[in-house]
Image (cartoon, rainbow over all chains, first blue to last red; front, side):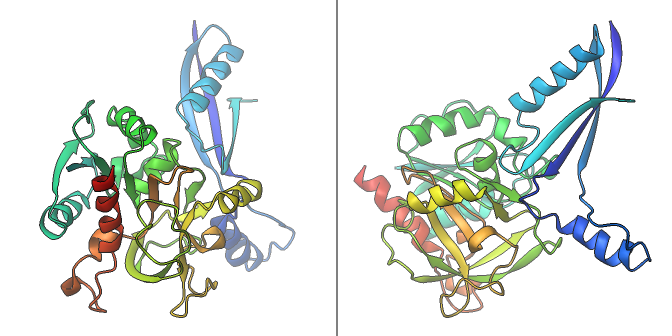
Length: 86
Length: 234
């Protein structure tokens, strides 16, 4: 059994506006001269240290708890899960 | 006839709601701690406003897993009135009793002000004693009140007449200027398909006494009056 660092990223679906990302883009990046940047989307990152036999098992446990406990709201959010370093 | 007002860690409109039910509406209401697992004997339930669990992760999600919510779901299923105000609305959404999501306000600011609301549906048992398109004045105070739902599901809400309240201007028009938080279609409150579960961001309990309103109005009372009438008829 090892401890794996699993990262959970929760963000608004593309159909739900992200006013924080819009403000960062418009009022910080573009005004700061970085007009190559087209879109900014903010997200919430949860880092979970998970005891499991394999990295895949750690991801599976994390995915299950995110669905079961509604860590993200499937109506408005997408949720992506990855192992640290992936 | 009695109503349970649920207290979660971080609720802060529980005593206001209790006061309105007990002292203004003159019905018995009790505060019930969220770890309670039995609401038998109650005829209705209110999830009050506040910041349950400090809005950690997002408003309402942790409270939605409280032991009391099994009973709230049972009461909703059995046709009892279930009212969620502000954080209570967020909890109902996260518990799956109402559809959609409440996202951070589009202004990224906490918004605290009086708004005009139009009663766009009489389907809910909380508005069926009102006239369609009547205007109500109530205050809002929230950071995560931007109602969101996918377009297809929004159509279903319209088809099933579940959109109960909209933010409007003084003439009853749902304009962008009258929308305080960027809610889809100016939605301020929705009900379930049966009409016995209502969630709304505005605070009827803060608008139930003329002395508390800058307009001398007590429009919030109508929500509680309709709820009580329904409980009497049941």
